[in-house]
Length: 157
Image (cartoon, rainbow, N blue to C red):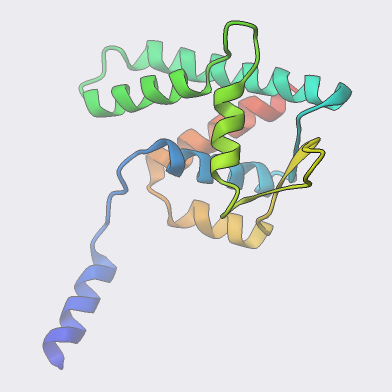
């Protein structure tokens, strides 16, 4: 019994590094938006254009970050940033299908959609839960998601 208690205590004190993935980033990014008061991402009509400005700002932020990280020693993080930037990049006609695809991928856990119209995606997470996600995440991923959320929201004002 003491061995089991020791193992549990050891696990609690060890810092578990979460491998950076696009899904983890999206969960933290959406959580950062919720904490900052944004719970809906519009897809159509005039408000959809505002969202595309935010998506463009997010892409530009990631693009700048990739440029700064080129000389970094951490190649795995750079490759993650490049994959993330490529996934969230605008398509040939300026649409952000990769971004929308990532949102739809989060439908069972964080996103709800008003079918059949799909005019907007509601981030179905309470602010308290979103704060918990951010507090429990690895610091670098959390900082990346929060800075990306700031860039996204700053462009819409």
